[in-house]
Length: 250
Image (cartoon, rainbow, N blue to C red; front, side, top):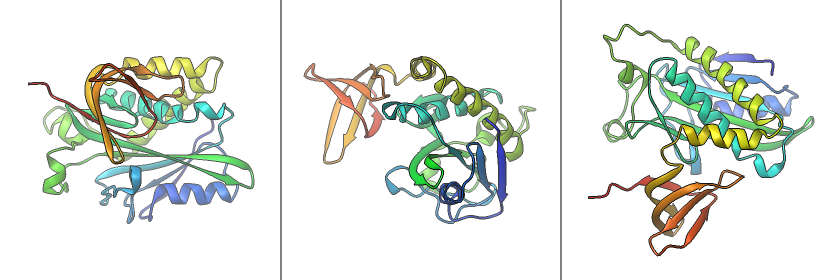
């Protein structure tokens, strides 16, 4: 995949700009990076705090030629790419189903995939946010989020900047996406994801599903990336979308 990067000082949303570029005919591999977002978004319409240079705000245009049932695995590939990017800076992370990346149970990255039709055909936009600095976190965020700066430590000797993160992220994403779109790629991505996620199997969780919730233990993933949860009454539930929270047993 040929990577082309468009850089902006400020955008409403990198996902919005990437989709606009796709509708204007952008090829697969076009990446949009902004130093600040004024209307950054997470899943379910949540706000993604996007202060200038405090995070990496990144979106990529994809035109995947895979079965529709495997489209959710694109976010798995993105999560693997984030995991490997953080590992390059000595940070051990954990992929929380389906598309958040945590370090020591604190969120360091989120992923948002959106789809749309364009004159050149179907497009998927994958947005990735990675916290670079913690200094601007609101008090309520500081307890549940972390950043690359915080994790590598001021005295570790390691150094990073947004450009170095983008370089590693695009290389890792290209590699994971190539695997996904190869023969038996869905199976390979599920395996790679499972190896990097403590949530894949044996994790006590609560899953919020709109007006109801399920408590149970994770039991692997389906071929399309849906999460299997064995509920407290022994019934196997298949979760296609929902918020997963780790339960700490006393």
